[in-house]
Amino acid sequence: MNIFDEILTARGLTGHARDAFLNPSYDAKHDPFLLPDMENAVKRLVVAHEADEQIMIYGDYDIDGLTATTVLLDSFESFGFSHVDAFIPNRFVEGYGLTVDAVERIAKTGATLIVTVDCGSLSEKEIVRAGELGVDVIVTDHHNVAPVQPPAIAVINPKRLLQDYPEEYEKYLLRSDSRQQGKIYPFLDLAGVGVAFKLIQALQTRLPGLEAGQEKWLLDLVALGTVCDIVTLIDENRANVYWGLNGCFWC
Ligand SMILES: [Mn+2]
Image (cartoon, rainbow, N blue to C red):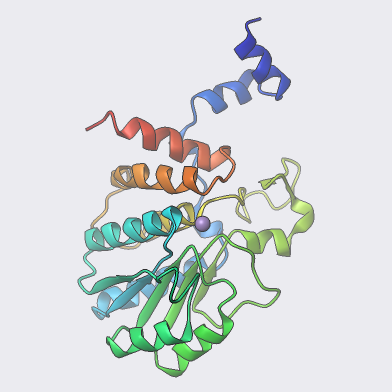
């Protein structure tokens, strides 16, 4: 056995697991609607699409946040949303995440919907303020969550599942003997951009403009954010990075 195979074997990667690790399948991706609140988010975005609402993507200044913002801007354009803008907080002024001041400034622009990426899970006060100003919020995030979720339209964050079903997961993967198979999301360690990408996969089932398969052109951005956020390169993260890097050779 060569040293490469010895390393893989020592890590328990033999047989099918070895093949899946070395040649990850993009098509093995998980149903985005198994993520908490995905249905609510998609319904609200379909309403925004029909009403041609003004939407603000609220990002983050790190690579995960920037790539997630770009993934939504790019795909929302494909879906035909015509009034979409992005807000990236200044690291030295606003700092990380939503702020009341930023929410107030966004409301003044006429936006009626904020979609966060890579932030927002703990932004109770700011989301309440948005509501007072008539602005709905959809949170997409992968950071720690509060025991009670903020009053957003949706809080799409896989870490909610770890909180709600602590026994079901081992190393962020749904246990193979779990009775929750097919009912809750199987993988918890998506980067912020990975969560934003799941929202796109869900929207593809309800809105025209980005045909199934065309979202793969966004995988270079998903790969970049995933690697820079140093999440585990297993399961869906691994497939997204593998095919994101391969995508460089498609064009
Ligand atoms: Mn992140």
